[in-house]
Image 1 (spheres, one colour):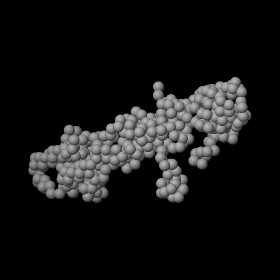
Image 2 (cartoon, rainbow, N blue to C red):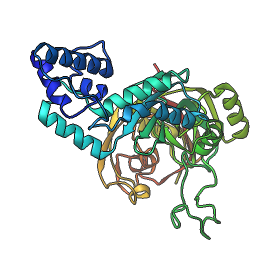
Image 3 (tube, rainbow, N blue to C red):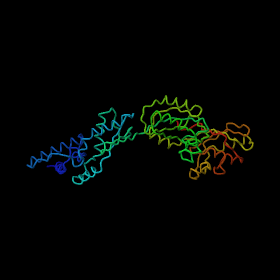
Length: 410
């Protein structure tokens, strides 16, 4: 009797079903299901015992490990299909929650027979329920990034769904100086609603995120949305030019087939004079990571009011002196309450005087990502060095700031 049959005979002393017997030797060969492998091993043990004149195996009654749980696979599959009925998806994956008592029995059996070639009961249940579900619905199993994971609690035939978010990429332009990029909860009530926010729970009644995300969430029938932008502009700054890249994430969507072209038109109509989007397409979690890690140069147009008159040639000379200059910026006073107080070096790639009209200068500046442009102008009481105000020796006030280009495109 070879070693495999000896081990199988030892295992069968515990009265196992074919699934649990075959699973003990799942890694011995491929091309068979655990049930088929178990049937084959059971026959081999019977034949071996007959050759040696031994008593036949006792007839199988009830599996001492799984308690005949595999007979429930069709019922589990039907419960999954019922749960998925109102969900729009292309790919799925099955997960299971197994009674700890069954897991303990399996581990005790491993101790008797060895687990070096074994597969867990959870892995087999996942696969067998998945096959049964696939026979009932026209969708594919996907292991890496399924649209939905159905978690089956095999103790109660209860199914929970973990629905993957949908991600939509686009670029936005913001024409308003009065709305933030993302939702801004009231700093007093933290979103619950109070007298300060008029019961809305928000510091600002809308945002770029909400103008884009609310209709997308509605069409997807999701539960919430999250905004992932390639940086952000100040509330009072416009985002013009080629627009800022973003990915909008909708959690737990029931619908995934969304007409993004129609949605884009709707957003632009609703957001008229405030927000405009273009290039909407489906995206991924990986692209979210790329957008969050990207640090492209930014180009700005800034309108500056000078404290006193300055000769245009003198101003132009000072402006040009910033080209290819590194500056040091201590965390600005205006954001010090929410950011660590650090000194950061940033490069000013270019600074150009576009116009001087009396005490108002219009500048165009291209900077390394992360540069505080307002502080570059007014100096923030010496926390940014050098600054335009510092070099001119007069106060400079930023009247308007626009982002006119994000250099992420080649």
